[in-house]
Image (cartoon, rainbow, N blue to C red):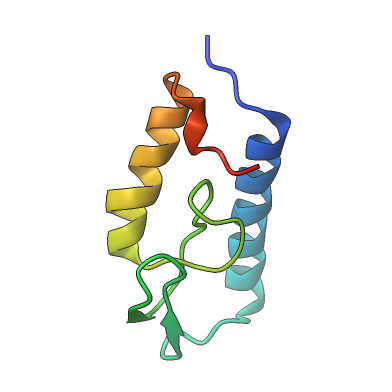
Length: 85
């Protein structure tokens, strides 16, 4: 059985809701350059929710794939030290 803290669940839900709202409302410009809050590199397109690595901002796809998703999997399967306080 998997257990996530309420803070972790809340941050994941908020990130998904914000992304969906932005998609529906067309708030973000797909050609606008953004700065990844993890690696600091510029990227274009949709940003990703960086939780549990960062509480705010958007990260690029490579950081999402190589840093954020593994941290989430690691957190789910028992290593709680990666969760932000």
